[in-house]
Image (cartoon, rainbow, N blue to C red; front, side):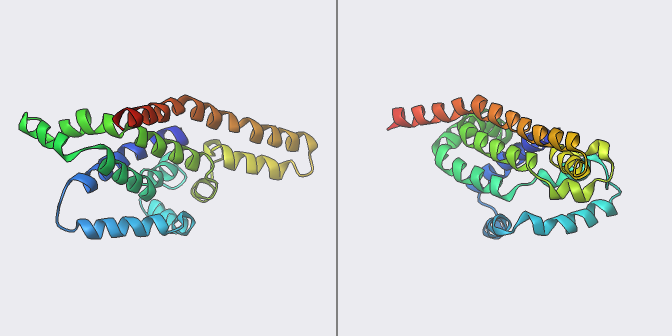
Length: 204
């Protein structure tokens, strides 16, 4: 739920924000882009404590939303989507769709998103892996063990298994099994990268 839901929503947010930065001219665009670059260079670990205070102030601490909400906006994902939109979505195609009477939302949904798909698959994969392996954020946000993600649960199990060999072996086995979803996701998404390479060679 954390990795899949967070990565999916983050990818949609990155697609919309990256497309807007790449293909729209508006006041303050340079400031937004500079702020985005600053967010890319800022280590996420430095935001964990401020995020906890914000979540706690809204009464969402120790809830699923306390882990999910901070993952929805990913500066690096927005930056990648912006670069890919600039390269993959021609301005001429957008103008042609506008002349045909398509709304801006329809252009984004029907024209831009399919063209950006290979790049968005990369954003999805990176965000999924990042959330899947994230330990500090859920460790700070959650106190209810039933809501722990895999990383925090394995850490807790490993600590309890220090004096109990059975629990220790179970934690090591769980860490090994936790790699299976990542490998499965990589194998299922690699066809999109292959299609992108093929389309690029055909264009050339």
